[in-house]
Length: 324
Ligand code: PEP
Ligand code: MG
Image (cartoon, rainbow, N blue to C red; front, side, top):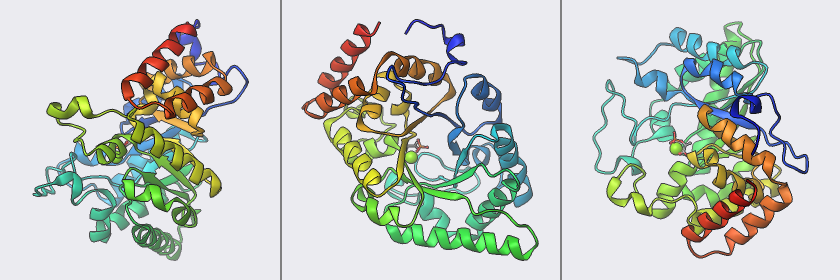
């Protein structure tokens, strides 16, 4: 852990035994592009498209969306950019599209809302595909999937947007499509999902919230919210094993990936890449460079045998201290 944070930007995220761990950024702001490139990030693992929607007073039209997505895709090219389709609802309400529900986190969120409003979804899909023209670095990601039927419907709309554009003379490649693993039901449907999509990314923020039934934003239960909870770790181990068994890579794009100690466990569980806010890249890279994959695997195996999150946290803190 000796190199300065500045120096680290130029160094690869290699473990002591030479395994490269791709590190991506989570963003939704164009102002993150330069700092992300300076940090040495390998691309964008999660672009939250709802952020440009949240800072406007109405739905941005297709042209306006093309401009936004183009700047991100071009800014990071040739590095991959994973654009997540609109994930509003829950805690992210659009002022110009009010939703009133008793349980917003169990309600009309993410893909559910998009499939009920295909006109909004298609506008976004057309804009994303148009923005990717000639760049070849777009990956599309679907949030809040709880059922394979939603994936089939979303893929159908992606194909429709693609066909419409082709008929208008705009030829673009179909991007790779992935699913966020953040609703517990899909932990049990990984092989079925793998037959439909190209990659998985675990949203540990929501996965933790839903597995533990703890509102991620409620201070009264904040002490119960813990991504190192044994149930979350078991779920992650199962997700990685099933995804790899189905020939698909898994990344983690929840906050957990940006916590250096937790990142170590994720690495040990076999997660293929990590995506985090740009401010966390250097710290996580420093930890990756201080451990071997073998040691990370050993720590993950130990952690999986533990009964309490506090024990996992102290196991990791001790390991980090030993590594200096
Ligand atoms: C998550 O749920 O972990 C995630 C990355 O998505 P968001 O925080 O935007 O819900
Ligand atoms: Mg989420």
